[in-house]
Each structure stands twice: as structure tokens, then as C-alpha cells.
Image (cartoon, rainbow, N blue to C red; front, top):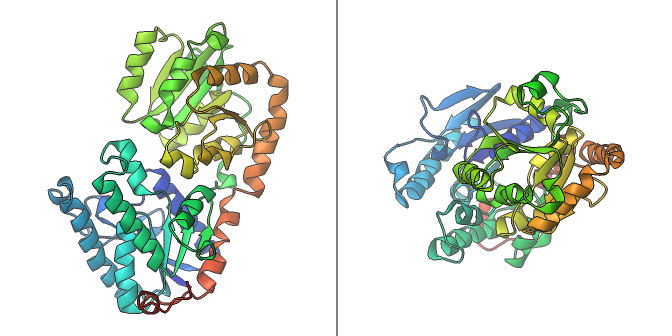
Length: 411
């Protein structure tokens, strides 16, 4: 099986998207499949057609810096340059299937090339990018750009040979758009369990450096986007349920909301309770995880968080860490209340504070939660199990694009 993956971006850029891609490629290759990889202009400047990274060769689409700074021109150039590069890649690697991953621009380029070459197209949705654009401030929900992006996404979904996605929330949304349920296969987010070690002892050197001592530590490690709801977590420290607690909040990472969070901490007088670590090297992340008693994910309710499952709670469970998260739809697919973690009412600062206080006051319950969370990722949410779901997608021999677009599909 020769699979040509069409991607928005890849390593060496670091993101949940690129890490999921790596995990998929590694597991597919472990199955004996041959994988080939092409990224769009979103990857950024390139020196050559091909680039080696982590023992994988990535083909790169052309990039023009000035065009990528101009709205609309950026999308058009991304699409046309990817179409050109994909045609070249298909001639070079002669794949059995084209597997395009979000965004819909990748899917559209894949549709064109699949029709020309008579190959099947598998389209994978990792998020609806119109919803991500709302949070990033580049689109307004139900505005013109939002509606156009959604229409393009739906077009690709309807005409792809087969569709995969990362969670039930996205699958349900697709079904509401008229995509047949049997056309969609779940390939859930997961973790490589062999790359994580249960962390039940603190890194003593780092604990001393940060002056944590006997404090109970709440933590968040990741990107500071508005939808993560970190402002609610900071506000919760001022609630009566937590004011008397000897605790500290450790924020590791950075992002668009960093400045606003620091201003909020100063305004509330919480400088002695909140530590901004900044971004840390990947090989140092586990040291910071070891310091945290409870990982908190207070995502706010919106289409993005209701439909998409995050990776971070799974990584926390894989390291035997307690998880407290808002009850948005994406978290419901990962966290079983009182078994693998705890849920609080989304957007409710008081309920968040009271939930945290209750968890911190019951350390005798922690070992059972640690074990059940670890068991969940080991047996249900590991990459080997997740990627095995591609077998049926690829071996079903989906119809080539010519038949689908000419209206001959059974769907």
C-alpha cells in the first residue's frame, strides 16, 4: 500500500497537528505501508522540493512570502501551489491512494488530482477550520468567510471517496450535513504510550528552583488560546473554596492570551500563586509535568471545543496525572467523571473552584484515578489501536474520483 499524505504543515513546526501526523506515519510504516508526504505553502519557506526530518522525507509546495501575507491571495496561492505540487508528487511516487488532511484547501486540491489520476481520495477532518478562525479572530461565526469555508468543507466531504475524523463530535456534525455515517471512520486522537512514563514523584531540583515546597500544584501545559479558558482558572484562585489552600498555579507555554493573563494575575494580586514558566524544550516538559498534582483544562463552550477532542488530557493520563476539565463535548469523549478524571460545569468559575477543592482534599482517591486513566490510554487511546482503523478505509478500495464526481457513487 502506497499512501500519499497531503498536509497543511508538518515538523519541524511544532503543533498538535504535526505531532498527530508523525504518530500516524510511524504507525502506518510499522504496518509495512509506504507513506509519502506533501505539505502546503502554510509550511513556510523551503530550500528544496524535499526535506528530511525525523527520518521522513517531506515534499514541499512553493512559497511566496509576500503573497502569504495578503488575505484571499494567501488562500488562492496555497490552493494553486498545492495543486501543482500534488501533480508532481503523484507522478513521482505513484500512490495507491491520496490521503488529504484538513484544511478543506488540501481536500480540494486532492479532489482535483484524484479525478485527473483516477485515484481514490480519503479526506481526514481534524477540526472545522471555520470554527478555529472564529476563535483566532479571522472570521465571524455565520459571516461570509465562515459560510464559504463551511460550504467548501461540505463539498469536499461529499465528493471524497471516504472520510475519516478524530472524534464523534465532528462525525455527528458531518452527518448533519448529509454525509452518510458509513462513509465516515473514526481515527481518534491518542498517545504513544511507550513515550510516556508515570510521574508520581516530583523533580526535586525543579521543585526547589520554583520554590514549590509543600504546595499543591495546579497546572496547564500548552498553548494559551482564548478557547482554553485559562482566565477562568486564574479567576478560580480568588474563589472562597481555594483562597485558603496552600497552592500554586503553574502555567507552562505561551500564546495569544499570555499578556492578558499576566495582566489579570497582577490585577487580582495573585503574583504569589501563579508562575508563568514560558515555553520549554520538548525534552524538559516531563519535568514540569512531574510537579503538577492536578492538570486543569477549563475550555469554554463553543463549536470548536464542543466538537473536537484535545490531546493534552490523554498525555496527562499517560503520565498518571489527575485531570479536571470543563464538561464541553470534546472532553466528554475522553473523561469519565470520577473514573478517569473530573468534570465541572463549563464557564462556571465557582464550580471549577469547588471541584478543584474537592479533588485536592481527597488524595486517598488519587491512585485509583491515576490507574483508571492510565488503563484508558493504554487500551483505548494508544496510536497503534487508533491507526489500525485505517485498514478498513484503505482496503475497502473506495471508488476512484472520476466515478464519484460523475455521480456514480452508491452514496
